Length: 265
Ligand SMILES: [Zn+2]
Image (tube, rainbow, N blue to C red; front, side):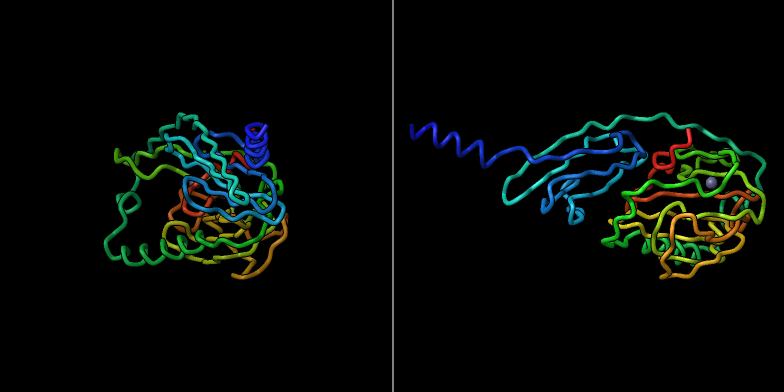
């Protein structure tokens, strides 16, 4: 009898914590988790913010190969979930005949680039309690086509460069850009070396979106923006090969595929 009671106690105190995931465990993907309120959540040993109603969010990097380990802990009841990551194949994009200064920046701009990278990096570290990331994103430009996708490897004048982490929309100079999601502006810069007119929005829990090469910017740092608000216009500022909008999605410093939240395929 005593044995049975002990066993029963064991089962009751170790009941499985409820958790569900929206999103796929594929390279570049954005994943929302929902668990019981008050549960502590770790992604790969790093604690992530959970909302009062148990939502958390994370993403999988472009080249991640190893499993994602999610640890849940509620009042000492610990649970570990291990998820395999599916690999993707990325396009290789070769662009030849570019002016050399477009492939390798001149030395006199190194300091400037360093400073600007820090500005962008800092904006991506914001870890607010906003929960807009739970809502559906909208496409920032109407009636457009995609001319560049996430993950493609660029080889410029034969030199392998950083992969392309954005989603490019073809659009004329001056086309209005809509905010994809509610959020707070954490960076508004009109002239960065690479990205030109640049906006970054915080959507909560480390999720940010970035808009680049903008011609005009209509919002200010610190401003709260509603989804669908016109935030600026398409341009070709920074190192852009013609007018287009490049948008990005980040979970802190991890760059994710915007297509995984936009449902445009
Ligand atoms: Zn781009």
